[in-house]
Amino acid sequence: MENLLTDLLVTLAYGVVGVVLMAVGYVLVDVATPGKLHELIWVERNRNAAVLLSSNLIGVGTIVVAAI
Image (cartoon, rainbow, N blue to C red; front, side, top):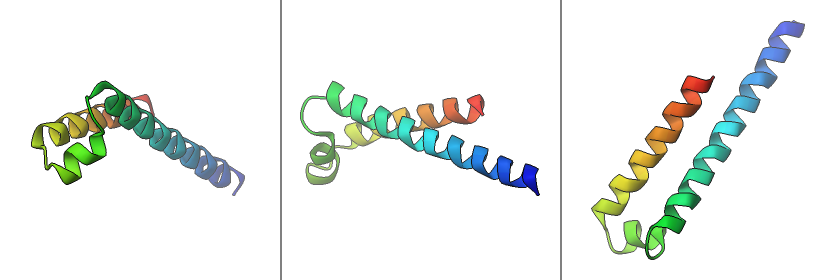
């Protein structure tokens, strides 16, 4: 039972680290693009900005999964 609890906590810690890294990736892409990324995607419906953001998040997610 002790191992199960430890493994559960480690899994939750990896999940939290993954979410934080995804958020940092979003902020970095937002800083690197001209204008606000949220407005570019949702207001102006800019598909290029959406592709840029999604490729970044897929890359960060792949790195996190490979690290685990």
